[in-house]
Image: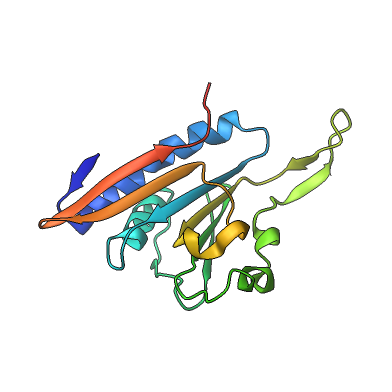
Length: 164
């Protein structure tokens, strides 16, 4: 658990996640990493994502996808989807969004030895308010939890993917 005193601290914590994601990607046979971002409104979830994206070289603005539901970034040879499901009324809305398409990496021809598509680009899904997606929410490889604490935020991460 870490105490974050400012948005700058929160962005730095997001930047630190890049090496963890790189490590997980190197160990997964199918390169999709799902990160759940948990916390109250204004706790710093989008700020954390901004730090992650900036560490990968994104120089543009990073806005919360509250109204669009998803913002898409192609960085560091990764497809990154930043979801915000706060405004979902029913998890079924994710089907209309095409959630299954987002969770499938871009692929090439099937591997001759395993009959599994060969991923061309790893997929990173950062999901704010994942609980609103019900059973359509993919399981988290990493949970990032931000909570209010005095003048700052407490940050806690839980790793759900087994690493070797």
